[in-house]
Image (cartoon, rainbow, N blue to C red; front, side, top):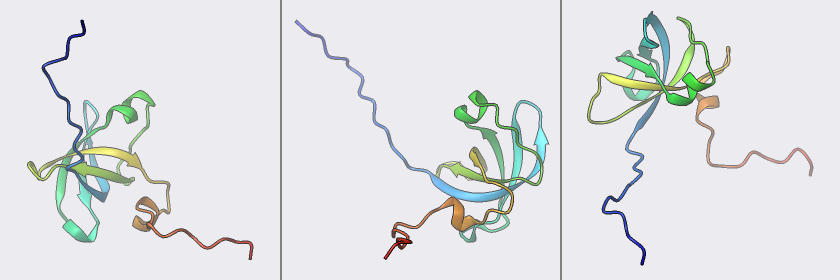
Length: 105
């Protein structure tokens, strides 16, 4: 006889992804990030590092461009999920759904 768990886990992706620039670094891997995406331009968030960023020891410095996730429920906090390479643009962070043309005819 098998028992079923009474809890149901639902994975929801109700997040807003934005691009920002790290303005200030605080202790305990928290940062102040200014959003540069068109959706919320010049909005500032208090962000923490995502778990994978901590596990892989990704270093974040003031001036770095980062991808930030925030929930629609709290518009003052966020989570840094990716550090963009230097010189990258917002287009590089959010690739389009259309495939790029093949280099071979």
